[in-house]
Length: 464
Image 1 (cartoon, rainbow, N blue to C red):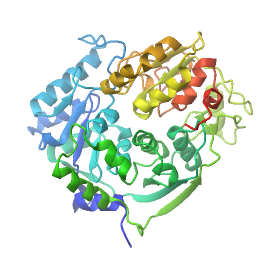
Image 2 (cartoon, rainbow, N blue to C red; image 1 turned 180 degrees about the vertical axis):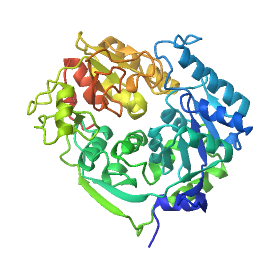
Image 3 (cartoon, rainbow, N blue to C red; image 1 turned 90 degrees about the vertical axis):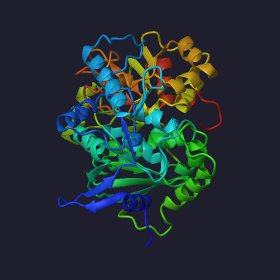
Image 4 (tube, rainbow, N blue to C red; image 1 turned 135 degrees about the vertical axis):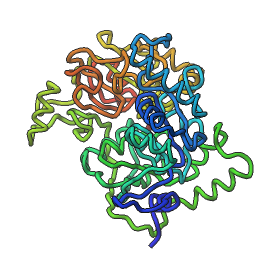
């Protein structure tokens, strides 16, 4: 039998099998942000160890960065300590740092746009949504602080092998349906624990027709379905995205790289541990209604009648009525951004609905571009003006209201329609705040009406 991409990349990077059953794996690209790296560097200093391969490590700042203007020192002293630490640590170690004024932004957006993520790589970061980079045909996973230390010290880490599930996504998706809706459908069907012990290989007609930015959205949320890794086999779409980016191979190296990237894709006769197939021809825009990313429904549907204690808890926490229609659920806040939906294509989608319109005046509405490059591109295209004219706050890059490690937080019982990736209790900064996950199209349309809205009513006839 042939091999999957996962197996090929694993074999190329495996050093040896460890006594605990894990494999010592070479990590080709290690990426850092300011929250999970200070303790790792402090531990190395205590051990008298310097980073072994600084040229394979890259860093940026995103989680604690204010999005309403950066003034040093940051008013949050802990945030300032974290920012100062990553500046100091990367400088001392000789690690390339994309900091404030140097092309910073959400780590899972900055690194691909720099051309640092490529097929066949192993990628690790102290952040669970590192699965994003699997969109390029990389084996990418989130790690803890002790593993950040291990990679800095040795360029390797111990990893437990995973099974591989092939998820085939077929059919022609309709108007108003985006990558976010696709992955919410998958998570809703397979559950938040469905991927435990697996790497997800996303494939099929739907994936082939997606842009790289859409593919990143799909892989980004593989972790929400319990899979540690989500990946997509590289193709011409992948190569076109990487070409000419700052750190992409150049000249004759480019041709050699493409040959290798093609060879790393899963073989036609590759063996999988499981295969699941979806026909998405009838998929409608999706949203979450509860307190896990698996509590999903089509926007035109109704809330469920609780069938278990968790669903009962979710409906009570969200303050929603069983069997009521989802459309019309009142919102207090709209958030567009995050590593899931903060790329230029996401902003274009939202702006396509907002152009020439005004949002409900009772809302707070924030849009945070995913990086300084995304922000600059959006402003070149005039998207910032569309957002501001509509009534949104146009912010600087950062993780912002996705997890609220800055001033962008929900207040009290506010309900936020968010393009981010998690809707757990308290996720957006308020212990009682409520989150509904949605696509940029759905978030923008809902902003106009101040409540959950089917975006298709605002779209032109052509499919999005």
